[in-house]
Length: 245
Image 1 (cartoon, rainbow, N blue to C red):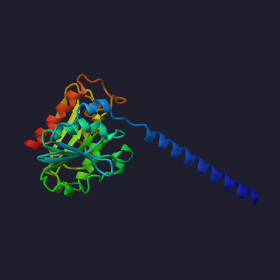
Image 2: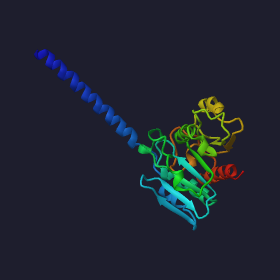
Image 3: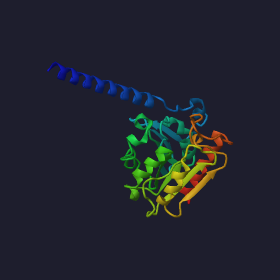
Image 4: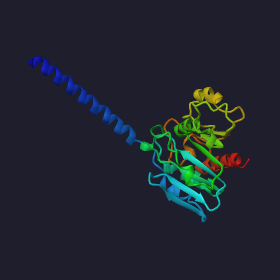
């Protein structure tokens, strides 16, 4: 009997140690993320006429006085959502209401439905778009697949859609940098068929994966030949072109 109790104790202790190790590994993984460059973000501060507010969940809203369209944006995996404020500010200056989503643990996979319930809060906006960077773009596309009648289009930055949107009439914009070494090009090519045949693809010459936001260099990325400012401004111009067409 004592041997049986000892065996149970040993097994239980082993499980506790294993769970502790797994918990510790997860905590370390989630604690290691790309932080927004606060100084660089501040340099892109919105101009007069744009209201910036924070929702209860930490998401940031950029609201122009006379918004012509709305964009819900999912940040890249393990990236501080505030790193994308410069891009949102650039769009807001041109009349786009932008909602920059703060994701749990900075991973969009933990809240794919984060866009749910946002649109009714802004009934004055008739044209809505959703999108994101990297993992955020893929998760935004997955959400969109079940809400195609609520949006006019999708914006993918250094990303691809694993959800099938090929049969929709959505406007889809895919933007990536020529020096992006993080984006899996094989998976990108494989998933092109998930997009409408007439989707728009823009390659930013000299751009990289990380420069859609302001969070410094990203592991495994290529060496950019343009600045953050240039890539963000070119990206904003491409998004505005889709919205205004």
